[in-house]
Length: 236
Image 1 (cartoon, rainbow, N blue to C red):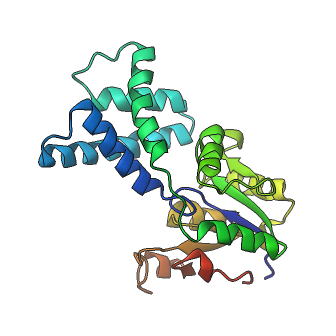
Image 2 (image 1 turned 90 degrees about the vertical axis):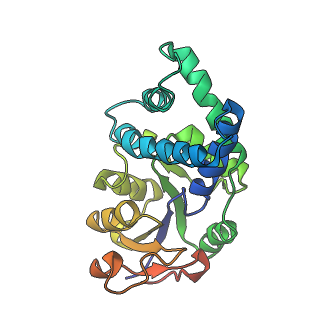
């Protein structure tokens, strides 16, 4: 089926979110004096991301706000600190955010993928879970923000991925039918299976070959994958 529109995921598809989060976290921990012992440092890193996995999805589901997610996360991470005051909790979390943002990097193939899709005449958007202001700034700082590529963040959509409403709202924004829209991203659940359930076409970006086996989760779901954005073909 012909592809007329293309939706890119942002984090770990266009921008190396996980790498930035790890680099930023280690810099922040060093500033807090929590990086002196290697074993303890790794335990702190593991616990930080475990808290992210527990609380960030709650913000995406709108059970709590993104600000509340940050406060809950930093308070649980630093239980020995007196962070009952919201302003203080926000200030401590802002230290992590500053380190994280300083570590933002676009993948080498991201800019050319956006430009190539637009040059091919496709309608292109970035469909991402998260806060619109943060995600837009991430694209700007990494040189990926395009005036003709709208940022479609879940904070400004009816729901977050993998809710079908997220993809359908994005298609409506691009003026393209779901069946003629291709979603590309690194998450099997959020960028592929959710998109397919909403009636879109989908490709899994598998940069590290984690879903390479045809008998694995991706193969069982009939998912087509690419290792690089340069490998995308604008036809089904």
